[in-house]
Each structure stands twice: as C-alpha cells, then as structure tokens.
Image (cartoon, rainbow, N blue to C red; front, side):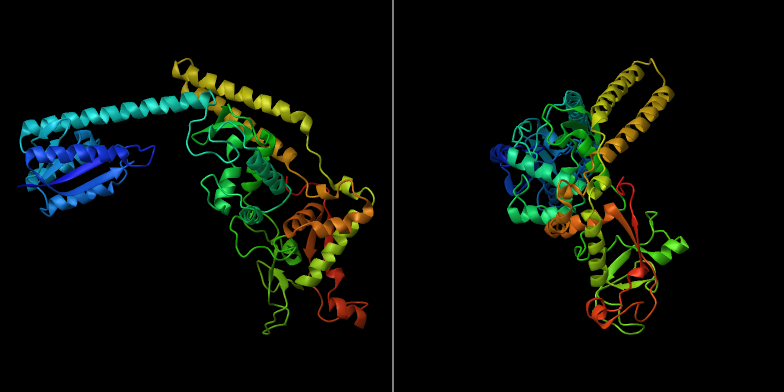
Length: 493
C-alpha cells in the first residue's frame, strides 16, 4: 500500500475555526480509502492564501516529506488548493518527476505529472486558478475603492470609540479619546496617558493593555475625525460621525509627527526643565541640534562635585558638551517655578499669554479641503479618459498638495490647546494653587509656552550678596546666571 500525504488549505477563515480545512481533510480521507492509500501525514495552511506568495509552512513540510521518500502520493481537495502560482507549480512538477509522486484530487481527479499531457493539464488548471485569483483580487480592490469613495466602513475589528458596526459611537471610549487628544495638544505626553488608561482599565478593542505604539496609532486614525482613509490617504468624509473635529485631529497629527518630539519612552521625565532649558554657551557659539534648536540641558545624577569628583546631587548639564554649563537641578527647577508662578499671578497675565485659535475660518478650510478632493477626483477621471495629459495631472496634483499642506498647517496652529487653560478665569492669587494641581507634563508645557530659559556659565564660589541663610536654602545657586525671556508667540506653532 502506497503512503500518501493530505494537504488542505483555505485562503480566508473569517470564523477562525478551521472548518474549511476540516471539510477538505474529511473528503481527502474518503478519497484515500477508495484509492487504497495509507495516509501518513496531514498538513494544512488555514487562513493563508497561495496567491499572496507568503510562506506556507504546511506546504513546505509536505515537500520536505516527499523529498525524503516518506510518501509517494499527495491528496488535495482541488488543484487550486495546492497552487495558485505558476512558479510554485513548476517546482512541484519537478519534485514529482524526480521522486515519482502521484497527485490525486477530490474535485479534479488524478494528475499524471509524469506525462506531457498530464503536465499540460496541470499547467492549464494552474493558469486558470491564477486568473481566478487575480480577477477576484481586482474585484475586491474595486469594491474597496468604491466603499472608500462613498465613505463606507469596510469591516474588521471594532475600532476604538465605536461599536461593532463601526458607525455607532461608544460614549465612554469616545470621551476618553477626546480627552487624550485635548491633553496631548496641551502638552501632555503619550506615555503618561498610556499609564493612566492602563491603570483605569481602559483596554484596546482586543482587550489588551495600551502601549505607546498602539495608543499613538489609534490617535492618528483619520476615522476619529469622521474621515475615510484608503491606502494611507484621506479620500473624503465617512458614514460614521466624528469623535473629534477635523482641525483638532490634524493638529494632533502635527504634534505627534513633530520630529523634535521624543518618540521613545526612556525612563520617564523626572525634572521640570530636562530637554527645555537651553545651554547659554551653545546659544553664543551657534551650536544647533539636528532639529535646528539650541542644545538643551539634560538632568543627570552627577556632575556637581567638581573635576574628577562624582556626586549624587542631581544636576543639569549641556547635552552637547559636558563642560559647557552645569547646575543643581533642584535649585534651578525651584527658581523657574517661582518665576513662572509670579508671572502668572500678575493681573491679566494669563489672557496676555493665551493664544486663541482662529475658529471662524476652520469651517472655511474644511470646505476648501473638500473642494480640492472633488477636483482631484475629477482630474483623475479626465486623465483616465484621455482628456488631460499625465504632465497636466501632475501639475494639478502638485498645486493641490501644496495648498492642502498649508491648510493642514493652519488647522494645526489654530487647534492646539494652550497649556495655560487651567489658569484661565482664576484670580491672580490662585496661580500657585493651580500650579500645584498640575502634573510634571503639564508644568513642563506651561514653562515651554511662556518662557525661554537660558542657563549661562556661572562663576565658582559664592554669588554676589550670598549669606549663610541664603546658602542653607540655595547653596551657591546664582540667579544672575539664568536668563529668562518672555515668549511673545506660541512656541509649538
């Protein structure tokens, strides 16, 4: 009795239960019994296309067994379960010729690959299967494009913020999403929101904990603004309602895509000015980092003990050259906090700092963006029918792309939320109370919005006017070596 291997495959298993390959396996076992073959192995590739070209582990194990002589026959439900690629078919034909392997199928009968006519039939069946796969792929592509143009949900896993139908808003998740967007625009970090959501038990739609990557990806989705995205491009409005308005979403995209924004979590921020305070020596010498900014100071737990002496006192130092400037981190942060609170305590100071978005023109920009999308679609149709040339189409697209980029910039500039909003409407004397309620991310955002802090080289020893009482509280910290400039614009725009 000849040994045989059963191979089963299904391209798409929507349920995930493997029922399709189970049916194929059952039919192949019945075929083996009729042919008098002994089945020594059953291999399957569930939810895996033969057309895609992706590796099929079950299929490769079957070929390996045939090469070792474990079996001399293959049973499949149909030839298209084995191959939809001419390249794979030719590899299989060579192997069958070399090792004398027979192929039997439930629906297409036997394939005698030892004869020219048998190989011809196999190649014709393979070509037909390839045609069907390409035709099916084309139909699916056209269907997705049609659904994208009409803003229809294409299915898949439930999106965060919406119910399983992909259209109905889930209020609890939508509220969390809106709050996260507002807080990031006000200066909060993604990692702090990740920690909060995980602590509160807010999970992804798959029931998993959030990570920086998954939360950032979710926040960047165009669907949150009620927009349809297809192949990485926004193609128009969608059938589902927006959770956040389009200008806010585009501002969020701009903030999260800022190359100067830290994208790796690291150990987490512990100090108010790390990455914000600027090095006075680098400013004077014109030293700039890769983002075109004066080099910032970073906090470290050493550097205050003098040359060759290590100390555990937390200190700021220049991120470019360790010897440029060094300052006690606790003293410097406390001083900057005192100045910030003093500034914000002045009558009318908060209103003077606050930047107001140009909400009156946001709707006009949204309408213009829709008009440009319509023109792009019209131009594509004109090109398809030969009424305009490729050069004309490229010129139009370049012009519209430039205008869309300008609209995005305007949306981002007007939708960003000021970090000073918690101070609005408070009495001047309440600035300290408000400051104490802010977490480190929000305090850093406030500092970054209202002032530039440039740390200059300081003279060794006691500063001018030093007293023992001053020294007990501030050591040798010299405020004269800190230059603070009031910002007259939003540093984030």
